[in-house]
Amino acid sequence: MKIAMWSGPRNLSTAMMYAFGNRPDCSVVDEPLYAAYLTATGIEHPMREEILASQPADPAEVIRQITGSNPAGKPHFYQKHMAQHMVDGVDRGWLTDVTNVFLIRHPARVVASYAAKREAPSFDDIGFWQQTELYDEITARGGRPVVIDSHDIRENPEAMLRKLCDAIGLPFDPAMLHWPAGGHADDGVWAAHWYGAVHRSTGFAGAEGPLPELDGAYTEIVDQAMPHYKTLQALAL
Image (cartoon, rainbow, N blue to C red):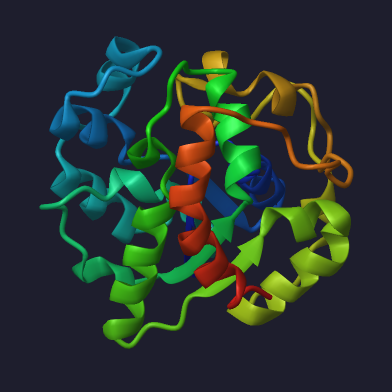
C-alpha cells in the first residue's frame, strides 16, 4: 500500500510521518516534491539551497520514484506531502494509484505556528485551498480520500489512529503511538529549521489549548482559509 498524506505546514504532519515510520512494515518519505515546488515557484524558503541540492527538482522524476517499488521492500510506503507542492503542471494521474488521506488543522493554529518559523506567510503558503482542490480532483477521478483532523489525533491518538488504519484497510500497530527522540533517518534536510519540537518528542503532544489570538494580516489569512477547513472538517473521521 502507498499512502499519500496531504497536509499543510505546521499540521502534525511530521509526527504522523514518525508514527508510520515506527511501523516495521512501513517505509516513509518526507515531502518529496519540495525541491520541485521551490524550483517551479521561485519562492524563498529557509534552507532553500540545501533543499534544492537534496532532491530531484523534476516532478516527473519524483513521481516515478514514489510510484515505483516501495523503499526497502516494505509492504507499505507512507508519503508525507504538502498540498501546496502540487503546483499547476505537475501530473496528477498517479493520485488514483495511491491511498489518499487529508490531514487538516484549524487555520488559526497553522498560521500562528508557521509565522513563528517563517515571517509573513501568505494564504498560498499554508495549503488550505490546495487541499480542497486536490480532494475535489481525486473524488472526481473516482477516488475516496480519507480526512482526519490533527486536533482529534491529539485528543486521543490511539482511537484516531485506529480509525484511520481501519478507514484505509491497514492493521493498527501500537508502535505508531511512540517513536525514538531525535528525529527519523528519512527526515528532509529542512528538519534542522522546522522540526525542533518533534525531534524532542517521543509521541504525540497532548490536547491543544485555546485557539491563538491573531491580528492584522494573519486574521485575514485565517478568514480566507476557514471555508476550506470547514469543507474538509465536515468529512473528517
